[in-house]
Amino acid sequence: MVDKLDKKTQFEVAQLIGAEVPHMEVTEIYKLIRKFDFCGEVKDLNTEGYGKDALAALEKLKQLFEALYNYGIKPEQVQFNLSMVRGLDYYTGVVCETFFVGPLKQYGSIASGGRYDKLVDMFVGSETGLQGVGVSIGVTRLFSVLHTEKLLDISKRGNSHVCIGFRTQG
Image (cartoon, rainbow, N blue to C red; front, side, top):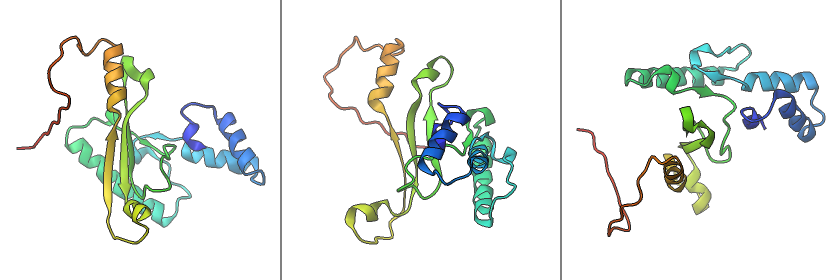
C-alpha cells in the first residue's frame, strides 16, 4: 500500500493500511508511512531506527549511486524511492523503474526491472542456484506515446516485420 504514496495522500494510504491491518495503531501506521515516504538521494535518507541489515543495504546503494554519478548520471536523473515496492514476491534486491519526465511525465513508467535470486526456481519447482537481473521495456507503450506526441514518424513503411538492435561498447 505504501507504493500508492505517489498517487494518494498519506491519509488515504493510512486508511488503506488500517483496513488491512485493523489492530495496528494509527500512530504506528503514520510512522510506517513517514519511513516509506522518501524519494531523493540515498545520502539524504534519515536512517534512525534502521537495523544492521538495512544499513548495510543502504551502504551498497550509496556505492551504486556513486557509480552512477561517476558515469555521468546527474543526481536529479535518478532517485532512491522507498515507496516503490513492486514485485516483492520475486525481487530480492534493487528494483528500478524509469519514467518519462518533462512534458511526457503524465505517461508514467516506461521500463522496470531488478534483482531476483530465485525467480527461476519458482518456474522449475526446485532450487537451481540461478540468480538474475532483468529489465523490461514497454515497447508498445513507448511507441504509443511517441506516436501520440508526434515524436515518431510512422508514415514511412518498410518491408521488415521485426527489427533487432544491439549496442556494444567499444
